Image (cartoon, rainbow, N blue to C red; front, side):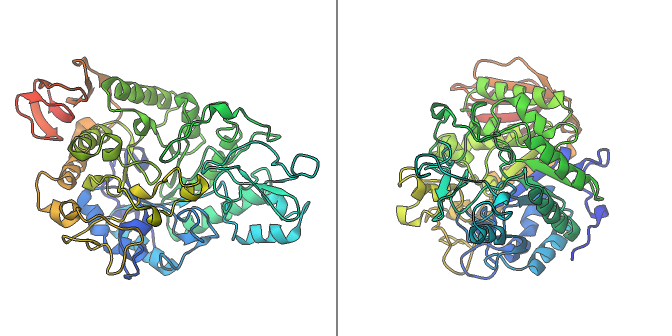
Length: 533
C-alpha cells in the first residue's frame, strides 16, 4: 500500500495549507489516456508510465475517472465493485504503484466516487433481485409498485437523463428507479445501509493513500419525498452531455443532499493530509450551487458556468461574476471548468477549426488566471476537438437509449495522441477502443513539444506563470473597464484581457507577460493577454 509523503508536495503554496483551494487538477479518463499493455484500452499502467507528462505540464493533482470493476455499460460509472480495480485497467497493485509514482513527483491523486447508483451487477442489486418485494435487500434501492390496474405503468413520469423512462419493471411486477441507464439502479440514501457502505468505500481508498474524491452526480443522491410526478416541459435536451436542471426538476438538487455531503466531509477531515472532495453538481442557481461547498460541506464544487456560456464577452463576465459572488458568500473558492468527459471539447464548442482552437487557447488563459481551483480535461492541453465517429463505433448509452438520435459523449473520449504520424499515435500497440482520426499527426505530445507556439507549450507556460506570479495567488480580483466585445479584470499588478469580439482593440498599456496568440500593438479577436501594469 502506498505511503503518503506530504513533504513531497512542494509545489503547493506554503502559505495555504488548503492545497486544493488553488490547485490545478488534471482529469484522466483512464480508458483514453495511455495503454500500458497493448490491448487498445488505456489503463493504470499507462497512466503511471506517462506521469512525467503531467510533471512537465505543471499540474498539482490528478482526478482519475472510474477504474473500478464494471460491466462498462456507462464507461465505468456503473460500478460493480467500488473497492477493486477492473481487469480492463489493471490491479490494486497497479493503483498503488501509480499512487506512489504520483506522490514521488509531488502530484496528488483524487478518484471518482459514484454514490447515486451501483451497477445492476453489484452484489447488492443481485441480492435485491433474488430477495423479492418488501425485502431488506430491495430497500437499499428505490423499488416501487407500478401504477394502473395491473401496475403496468411506471411509479411516476420521471425520464432518464440518458433518454427513455427512469423506471424498469421486473418480472415480479415491481419497478426500480434509474436516473441514468437501466444498468445503474439508484440507491436509497434514506436507508442506513447506504451511507454506512459509502463510509466503508471512502475509508478504503483513503487508507490506501488517495488524496480525495470527485463526487459523481452530487446533486442527485437525495430524491424528492414521495417521488411525485414532475412537469416534463421544464426538461431541455442537449445533443451532448448533461445540462443544468431547473429548480422544478424534482430529480436533482434536493436539500437533503447536503446532509450526506456533510457526512463525507467529516470522514475526510478525520484523515491527515488535508484530504478533499469536489462535487459534480449541475445546478443553475449559483447561490444553490454554493451550498455544496458551504462550511461543513464538500471542499469544492465544480463551477460549470464557463462550460455553458457562448463565446461572448458579456456572457463570460456574467458567468465569472455570478460564480465569484456566490462562492464568496460561503467562504469557498471557485472551481473553474472548461471541459470534461461529459461535454463537447472546448475547441468544438467554440466553433471547431482554427477559430475554435484560438478561442480555446484564449479561454485557458482566462480559466487559469481566475482565483480558485481549476480542472483541465486530458487533451485540453493539446487543443483537441471532438471526433466525428462513425455510427458503428459509438458506445455511449445515450446513443441506444435515444433511438440513435443523440450521438452521446464518445467524441470527446477518443484516446490521446502521444507520438508518431498515424493512428494510434503511441497510445497503444493494439487497436484503440475508439478510432483515432488520421489527421492528428500535428496534435501529438511529441510534435507539440517541439513547437514553441503549440497549445501544449502554451499550457506549460501558463501553469508555470500561474505558480510563479504573485499576482495570481490569493483571492484579489477587480473588474476593469474594457471596450465592447472584451472582458478585463485585475489580479494584483496583472491585468487579464480577453477579446471575444470581432475586431481588434488597442492593447492595454504595460508589460506583456503572456498571450494566447501573437500580438503586437493590438489585441486581436479570439485572443487573451496578461499584462503587468
